[in-house]
Amino acid sequence: MTGKDPAEADVVALLLKEMATKERDVAGFQARFLNGRLLSKGKVENWIKKKAKGDGPATAWLDIPLPSKFKFQINRKTGAIFTKPRFTVSKKHPALGVHYRLLAYGVPQDRWERVVHTRAGGVLEQLRQISVRLATRYGWDEGQATLFVLTGLIPLHYPIRVTVDRDKINLRVDPTITPRQFVDSYRRIRRQVLTRRTRTLSTKHLRLAMFLAECEPSTKWEERLNIWNGTYPPWNYDDVINFRRDCLQARNRLLNPKISLSRVLVFNTKERKKGRKLPPK
Image 1 (cartoon, helix red, strand yellow):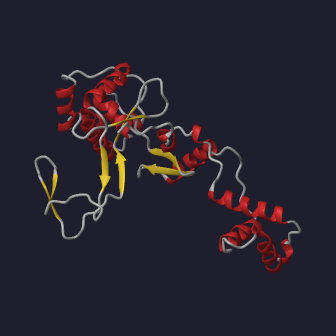
Image 2 (tube, helix red, strand yellow; image 1 turned 30 degrees about the horizontal axis):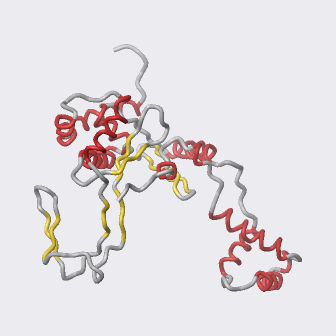
Image 3 (tube, helix red, strand yellow; image 1 turned 30 degrees about the vertical axis):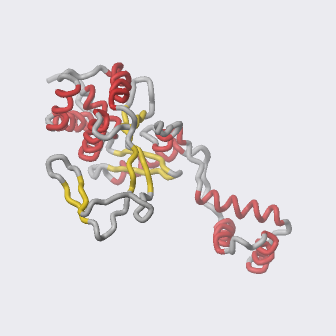
């Protein structure tokens, strides 16, 4: 063999793709809904739109707490769940939430994953279930798994995967990564996502944040200022406006670091939710 030596991540990606190709539900879906012929990347969007229209309106899923007197049985062939005795949603036993299931996928011109609502029993819901299982088993993004089923494209293998959710950096790390590689990667990621240099809060500002958390919410700022000045004479404030400003800034700097979501290279949950609309009832 000749040519450039392969990178470890590329080899792993190829091996995972080979394993996933042999999955029974993957081959079955491709044979049934693609006639055994994979799509090109440019046709994925239209294919999904066509199937979404054919499936019909999206299904709303209720979150229902099942009272202890009701038992359930699972049909092993279909996976359907039945209750004994028959359970009915009512004022006495209401649902506590509603959600829609979403199929994630990607298109060539987009940096972020797109999503489409699915219908129970529909083609896209079947694809979503396969994609979720593949993503869990092989460490892929759900959108990557969807594209793999439809196009056969090899999902990238990231030894370190990054998401940002609620202003937190979340890392999913391959156990083969060395401590040095982890530290170097985190340093690079942190530099990418922070919009400004972060400084460690001074003792004074940590005290301000703690003081604000311990105060009764109904306490007026003038009263808080008097208590603060009596407790911490070295850090006295003459003006309540400046005191309030410093308290709030100290709290916000601890809870909300300035993270640039647009610069995160791996899929970002906040971007995924941006502009999403609920389907018509």
